[in-house]
Amino acid sequence: MDLLFDSHVKTKLIGDLNPLHSIEVNILQETGVFVSKHLRFDFARAYQGNSISHVLVTVADVTAQVKLARELNESREQNESQLEILTSLLHAHPILLKEFIENSYATYNRLNNILRAPASNSLKLSEKAISLLKEIHNFKGEAAALQLNYFENVAHKMEDSIVVLRQKSHLDTNDFLPLSIQLESLITYTQQVEHLAIKLNQVGGGFLLNIKEKTSKNITGNRLTDGWDNLSEFVQHLAQRQGKRINLVISGLSEIPLDPGYQQQLREICIQLLRNAVEHGIESPYDREMSEKNIQGRIDLRLAKISETEMELMVMDDGCGLKYDEIRAKALASGRWSEKEIDSWGNKQLLALFFNEGLSAAELSLDAGRVVGMSTVMSHVIAHRGKINVSSRRGRYSRFVVTMPLVLALD
Image (cartoon, rainbow, N blue to C red):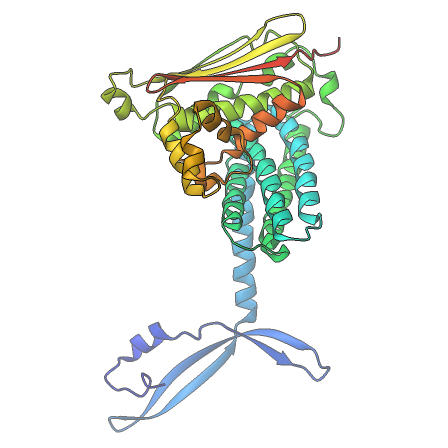
């Protein structure tokens, strides 16, 4: 109001500064119901001589314009979303995309059950957060492997939300409400992907195998390679984001006809170990050059049958090796162990922290990543009574060897 009556302020500037272009008001009707309207207020000065004597106010109902603008914006966002989905569908392998959608709904059910499970105290809520983090991290790895960026980004945001929760001194059930909203958004997006995939299948003569009709039990032939084809792309995708140059050498993955469900678990192990190698193992081109290494790092991924009942998966990188001094420092900073206790630990005890799902991601990660992925690896290994061997040399290499029982596909 002061500006309106200030003759030194130009009229055009008043119009530019006007904050009342669209004000939402709730108007009470005779029936007792409130109706929402959007009003626009415009102001004009009235002069007597050279002085501003009055300000005239014009009020217009712009509800229809606001509604139309919102509809256009929603339509634009929906079109952009549909285009993003279409691009993802055309890029992804049809069978792997089908499996991803099926696995996603299973993951959402598990996440929903975890969120709905009662928790009587802060400790139980903290355990709930860890369980959620494991599920979301696995989901993010699968999405990243298929380069489904939207899924990966939403999962990453959910991970960030959980990391923030775990840093709170006291948790209550309301702290998990934002995760429920994010999960609902993820489910809606997945339904859009599924719907569009089915449409593409109808018009494209089999672009995507029918999600409702075909199961993994009757996928044969090329199915042996379908589950592994995208691991190279996954590594290159991660390397590009990290500004690194990496050569992935794969052998043996397609030579053992594994049970589809078992192969999926082995894929999860591969994804976590490869992610760890790219993000924490292989150095940047500059650091490698300073260490007199080839600026292109190398990761070897090998699967081999070592007996009639066992197989061996190896992931080895020629990176910086495990930094035990930094692991020790992070463990000390966590406050969970005394300095005297940590000083007495050998490398094997420090290494065990990689597989400890109860340790905060922020406490161990060197770049705000998640160590929960390594706990997933250990969970799969323990569930199948396998074993994992880790060896490393500072500045030279890290090697993870996972021994698992053979679970072959049925003929």
